[in-house]
Length: 121
Image (cartoon, rainbow, N blue to C red):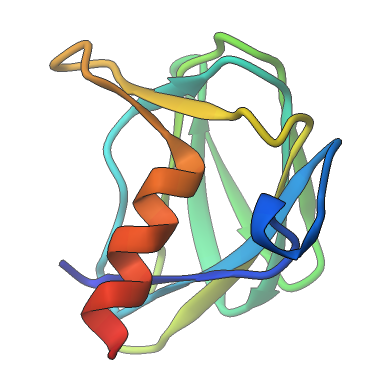
């Protein structure tokens, strides 16, 4: 898959207002174009990324921070083919969802975290 998600502040630790976590991208890895039902902020913690927001690509690097409004199509990909890239993400609700633009499939973000955690064990 090329990415590993690490939940940080979630409903399981008592969060009632927002979700946070990290995603580690292997070299060349990216995620599909998607939207959320709430605003999202992402900070690059390590490496360089290409973020596409509403059809426009931006090069972002360590400590650069993005803001994506609810419903805005976006995606992140590692700008390096070999070096890792890590992001910190914050969703403005514990009930955040992700809808894949290509398929229209919607899933709760925290449900994805349970799957990611299961793959790491």
